[in-house]
Amino acid sequence: MSVVQDLIHLLELEPLEHNIYRGTNRDVGTGRVFGGQVFAQALVAARRTVPDAREAHSVHGYFLREGDTRAPIVFFVDRPRDGRSFTSRRVTAIQHGEAIFHLSASFHLHEGGMDHQTAMPEVPAPEDCPEELELVRANAQKIPEPLRGILTQDRPLEIRLITPNDPFRKREAVPAADAKRQVWFRMRERMPDDLMYHHAVLAYASDYGFLPTALLPHGVSFRDPRLIIASLDHTLWLHRPFRADEWLLYTSDSPTAFGARGFVRGQVFTRNGLLVASAAQEGLIRLREPKA
Image (cartoon, rainbow, N blue to C red; front, top):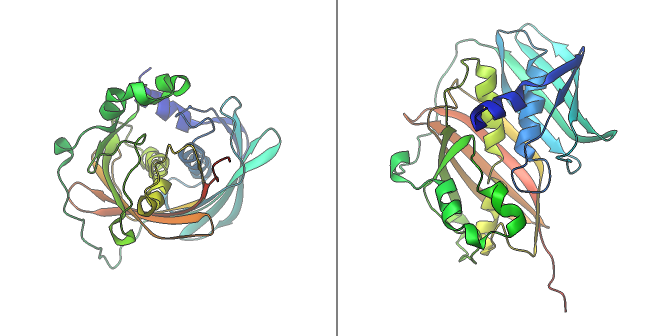
C-alpha cells in the first residue's frame, strides 16, 4: 500500500454503530496524534451522516487532550439539525474513555450567488521550489536518532517550500508584518473523485506547519528544545470545490501573539488563483526558562 493509499485508508474510518466510527493513527514524528489527522477524521465522521448533496463549508475543532498514537480513536457524531439548506453536526473524539477533540461542522446544499475573492499572491511555481522532504533527508544527520526514521519516511503530501528554512538552526526574527509562510502542496497520487476526501486531505494538511508561523517574529525554531507548542483550536472554511491531488498554495501569517498563545490565519489557492479555503488557529507557544 502506498503512503497516499495509507492516508486515504486512515480517513475512511470503520463504522461501529449508528453515528459511531473508529479510526487508526499515523505517527508524523511529534510523539502524539497529529492534530490535522484527528481534525480530518472527525470531519469524515460528520460527513458520513450527511445527505450526499451537501458539502462542508465551515469546520471548527478544539483540541482537548494529547492523543495517543498507540490507541484507536472512536468518533461519536451528534446531529443537532437537518435544515432545508444547511446541516449541522457535532463530533466527539474519544480515547481511553476521555474526549481528546471536539468538532462542529456545517454542511450546505450548493446554490448560486454573489462571487468575489482576494487575489492570490505572486509566488514562484511549485516546480521552481525545493521539496521539503528532500531538504529533511539532506539534513538527516541533524535529526535525533529516535526521530530520524519517522521524519525522513515517505509522505503522502508533496510539499514545496517557497521560503526554505532549517528547523534545527536558530533563525533571525522578522517583523510581524513580514512573518509569512508560503508552501505549495498536493497529494502524490490521484485520489478518488469524492469531494469528501479532498476536503479531508485539506483539513489534514491545513494543520501541518501552521502554528509555527507565529514563531517567525521571535526567531524561535519549531524544534527549539525550550519550546512547548500545541494547537488549541482550528477552523477551516471551505469556499469552492478543488482537488487535493493538484497543486494548492497555502499562505499563512500571524497577526498577534500574547500570553503564551499565538494566532495564525491562512488562505488556500488553486494554481490558477481560485481562493478555495481559509483557515485560522490559536495555539500554545510557551518557552520554558533554561535551567540554572
